[in-house]
Structures are given as C-alpha cells and as structure tokens.
Image (tube, rainbow, N blue to C red):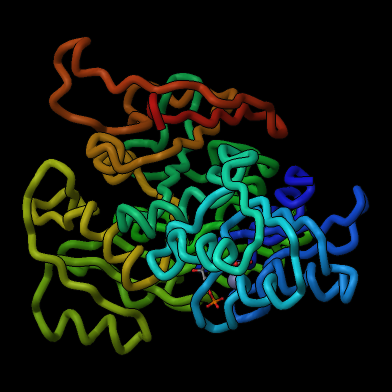
Amino acid sequence: MMSRALQLAKQGLYTTRPNPRVGCVVVKEGKVIGEGWHQRAGEPHAEVHALKQAGAAAKGSTVYVTLEPCSHFGRTPPCADALVEAGAAKVIIAMLDPNPLVAGSGKKLLQQQGIDVEVGLLYGEAYQLNQGFCQRMTIKRPLVRCKLAMSIDGRTAKASGESQWITGSAARADVQQWRARSCAVITGVKTIIDDDAALTVRSEQLHIEAAKACPPPLRVVVDSQLKIPVSAKIFNGAGKVLVATTCKEPNAISRIEKLGAEVVVFNDTSTTGSVSGDNSNQRVPLDLLLNYLAEHCHCNEVMIEAGSTLAGAFTKAGLVDELIVYMAPVIMGHEAKPLLTVFDMPKMADNIALEMRDVRQIGRDWRMLIQPINK
Ligand code: AOF
Ligand code: ZN
C-alpha cells in the first residue's frame, strides 16, 4: 500500500514544486477505497484527494501517506484535521515532514485525537523522492545536480569554447526531463557568451507527458562582473532570470534589471568554494548562492549546466549531490577542455571519491549517474 502511495506521489514529480511530492492511499478491510496525490502547489494535498474519493467509507480506515499530514494553515487547511474528521482509525506515514511548520506536530495532533500512528514504512524511498525539499528545509540548500557532457577522452568543449554538439539528440532530450523537474538551472556567463544558451524547457523534446505541465524553471547566471550581453537569448525564454554577481555598479545592474531579470549582489568572499563564471578574480560565493536559491526562491532541486570551471568549483566545494555525465563515442583531442577544471589536487589523497549509481545507454551515448560517497 505504501509502494502504491509512493507511485502516486511520483505523478507529481514535475509539478508540485516548491511543495513536496506526496501520495496517499485509503484502505478498508484490505481494499483500496481512495487514492490521491498532490498535483500542484496551492491545490489540495494528497490526503484531501484520497479522502474525497473514499467518502463516508473512510470512517475506520487505515490511511497510508508518504509524508506526515500537515497541521498548519498554508495555502490549504491542515490534512491532519481532515483525517480526524473523516474518522481514520490508523495513519501509516513513510516520513515526518521536515517543514518546521509541521515537523512532528501533524503526528501529534492525530495521536491526541486517538488515531493510531506509525512512522517509517519505506522511509528511504520517501526521502529520496523529496530529498531536495528536505535539504531546503533542514540545511537551507537545494539538491544540486550537475549535468556534464564529454567525449571518451574526457573533454567537454574545444579550446575556443565551442561544444555544440558532443552528445546525440536522444541524450539532449534526456537532459530536458531533468530540467523539467528542476526549480532552477544554473550556468556561468561564459556559457551564455559561448553558446547563447536559453536554458528553457523544450516541451517538444519531453517524452514524459507529465513533464509538459512543469512550471518554467528559474534560470540563474553566475556573472561576477556583469558581462552578460543584453542581447543574450536567456532574457527572452519562458521563466524568470536571476543574475548572481559581485558587481555593485548601479548602471551595470539597472542595464540587466531593465530586461526583467533579478540581480543579486553577493559580497566577494574569495573562498575556494566560489567562482566568477568568467575566469576573473571576483568570486560569487557558491554556497551562499545556493542558500539564496533555497530561502528566497524556494528551490528544492537545481541543475548546473555550465562549463568546466563553474562545474568544477561547485564539485570541489562539495556542493554537488549528483553528477549526470553523458559520454559520447567521439574523441575531441588534447587541446579541448577537460570535463571539470579542479585545482590544487596534487596527491592521490586529494582525490574526490565518487560512486556510480546508474549507467545506461541513451541513443548513441552513455549516461552515468554518479554521487559523492555517503550521500
Ligand atoms: C501534506 N500533504 O500532499 C503535501 C504536504 O501551502 P500548502 O497548504 O500547500 O502547504 C505546503 C506545505 O505542506 C509543504 O511545505 C509541506 O510541508 C506540506 N506538504 N503535506 O499533508 C501533501 N504536499
Ligand atoms: Zn496537508
């Protein structure tokens, strides 16, 4: 029953943000009498849909829900109250809600009303589905995926910056599904200058139907000197644009704001976990950028689609939760740029150890899902 609830929750993979994906199953005498999942922020929660389907029969039922029922008035009223009113006898919860507005109080409310509550069934699966939401709530950082494409000789762009295209159309369409589930896509100003990337979701390339309903992701450019050209394609596509900079020059800032983009000025901390986006000395602090995206933009999952310098800096700083590496059967040559530019690692002991989580062929390329160990 909890597997079914998780399956239902996954139907909201592309659309619930910034809310978590949640599924619910109402069971009576061994039979499913109601099912539901949270579809979109602002709309009813999973429990409400499932209880509605069950109707009066929900009295005395057992309810399986993938996240602790809420106890607060947000955009919608508390689900814990709805469960009490419906007369649920038992509620089985996969994981507690890390949202400080809930965090155990939904469970407590149910118990105070005499409902039998169990927590932890299929916890691992439930956590994985909402890892980004959980990280935003607990460490104020979204789940960070870094997408990279390389040749078999480990190169990601020619010395000139040219990189279109290394992978085939099937791999590039696969990237679109990852974009569609992301709250934000992050790049560097160098990629904007070299590729004029729009970083939008191309719905014609989405083969998963549900992904087509995704809200357009926020597009973020790391540009410490505000060198982004006003003619850049990114200013025209669907979705908001945020430019992260260390430049405080009012004219340079208003030039970008006039295009409808938000400019966020960070203090240059020049720590190792930061990068300019254009090889200059000024540095946008990447950890603070991620904090900003979590706290102010409610980003649960973000995807980095950048060149080797910015991708390397995020990785070296330990800010990447998952690398998505596409490897194309092509050789790009010694002069071409490496997959990741990471400095100051002279010894084997300096290596960043990773683990392979999944490898599969997508069209003519290979896709590897790689995670830091212990993540
Ligand atoms: C549930 N069931 O299906 C979901 C929950 O603004 P609201 O009212 O939509 O509340 C959003 C918060 O509710 C969200 O941050 C999370 O803590 C919880 N999500 N809770 O009982 C659901 N989606
Ligand atoms: Zn709720």
